[in-house]
Image (cartoon, rainbow, N blue to C red):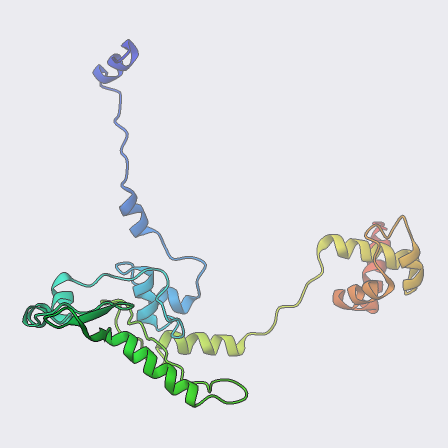
Length: 248
């Protein structure tokens, strides 16, 4: 039951209805961020993430199972791809023997005439016997590895062996890149200036200074920090500027 205030709002002509935008529309208008420019330029918003990666040639080719899910095949394609076994099963008068079982054949008097084992058990026994013949002092020889390949999702397309434009652009960008080293922060620079102003280039005294060396840096760590900040000459010049300006 609505309260009187809500009824007055509904009757009032100055009350404006709040317009809400759908989430789907907002997601479609959202820009691709935090990705390389080469990928953002070729990204298709109508495709899924996996389809876009397949189109750009960035899907991994070493995984046996497709990670991230896959598109399902149409029922018509599945029906056409699977062979029908109804005719063969109907034609056979006897049921197939399951693995691990056997069928006993008897004559009219009930005597056991033959024992029929499952085809899988017979094949396993033959393979085991063949392996035992080939045994060596170090054990059975290793066989050829059989790798099961799982086809990727339909609609995504087969993986391209050749490099796409996006892959080539990313490789060129990676070849030009340089390792980003650690930079000196503002707090570390201020501490180094105070240390150089007090102890100069004496790193032993700076390491033993309990009050100034709050981070308990060793002699080697102080030397590396000075080198990373630009060297002794650069720090001494900054200290001279600060002293001239009255900041130290």
